[in-house]
Amino acid sequence: MPATMRVSVLRAAGDLAVEERPVPAAGPGQVLVRVGSVGVCGSDVHYHRHGRIGEFVVTAPLVLGHEAGGRVVAVGAGVDPARVGQRVALEPGVPCRRCAQCRAGRYNLCPDVRFFATPPVDGAFCEYLAHDADYAFAVPDSLSDDAAGLIEPLSVGVWACRKAAVGAGSRLLVAGAGPIGLVTAQVARALGAADVVVSDIDAGRRGAALRFGATQVLDPAVDDAAGLGADAFVDCSGAPSAVVAGIRAVRPAGHVVLVGMGADEATLPVSHLQNREITLTGTFRYADTYPAAISLAARGVVDLDGLVTGRFDLDGVEEALTAGARPGSIKSVVLPGGLPA
Image (cartoon, rainbow, N blue to C red; front, side):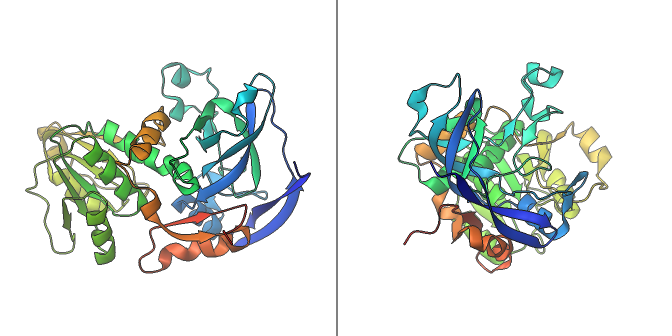
């Protein structure tokens, strides 16, 4: 085991540097993981641009990246040594497991959760990291390193579909054909949804949606979804206009799930919600989704590798964080160990 490792560090908004840091040791109940691949999320981009997301402010050097997978190279006290060599997907949030939310099974709402790349907790743009063994999930060798890391955004799609009560024969409307919208569409089809309609203003992303599970696509600039009669609507765009349009597309007693992060406040058609008894909820991360997400990816009913449109090493993290603006870009990943020769 080397004594030091390379780490990409956000020192302030727009200021990234690669540093040498000591390789951490696996503490009690932890595994030490050699990081294989880390997906770039919109939150990473936001921290890089603005140095904050809401109340979470970068006040000290921060390692970004929370969509991670890798291989266990050492274990701490109390962890089965047989886990050394195991390939894993890392659930990035470790809750306290003692509070009322944790005891109720809603550990994603734990007020004391420690989540990768959320100040002051470092993330995964590094060669090695120590993580709670209970949140390092074994993945089969049939999954690539990229797919192991992308179990995290897939979990967001699994959670959204659970909240939307998607099942056999469902008609689902999804707004936004970014990575989360695309995995949500795939999960819905895997769960038996008969119709998955995806709306996006970008023609290229509408084309991607058709490749990743959508049965129909809409251009919100010209297509009116009001008469769709969807059983559920999942917003992955964060656009207030998309939320209102989606609500009007849902049948009576249907479900509306807000996933995308947009305006802090929005005007909603309250009488429409009331008169149709539509259930409206938000999502915050996920809980107990990793086993299902790994199963979906391992069985090949969800394609994660196909989402990857750019790979970068630690020296290219800044490029990875800005690659989303390129035409045709869907998902960038960072390979801390370096790009293949």
